[in-house]
Image (cartoon, rainbow, N blue to C red; front, side, top):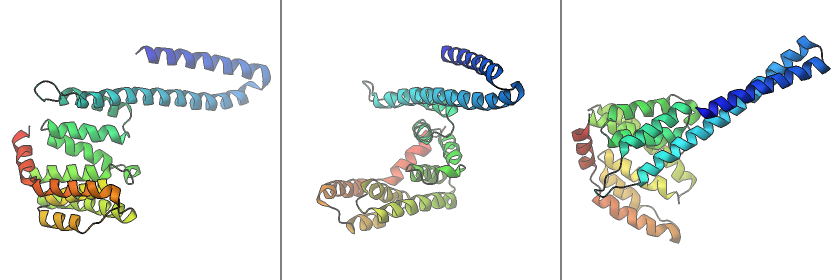
Length: 235
């Protein structure tokens, strides 16, 4: 709150200085029109900077909460969700806040809220190229599958796989895209296809070790168990 008080005082002083300058050096009416334009621009920049700082503060605090695990191995997802929600309200277009917000909602069993969060991202075309987009499609697919909306879940999963395929085509060593595509295929009840896909890939020496680990993890991955837990935890 104190930040806003300081910013408002700065704005008032700025307006006074510009008005004095106008009276001294230019015809009042013409200069006032110009000064209003510059005032609006400057105030907007100050406001934008302040929002970015506040958003970053809440976002970083949320990440720090997720990194803390208590003696019982529990993460305070409720507190983290509050912080990411606050961050989202400050900057509604901050995709990273929405990503972690939906993550916390999933963990807390608020899967329908997670789907709503995902849809706010889908509705903004500016996010189409964002690297986190396929994660939102995967989350939406999971929620729809838990809710029994199989056709909708397949559409979301297909979209995620499509984006991962584009990334892999662009760079065969994109290990993140490879791993997540394999996971999505498992959620689609295509574990055999997932394993076949992983076995068809050969990476450079640096990434090959990671690929072997992913193959092992996918062979043990139980998508049905995750779906069941989501159903049990749903609020």
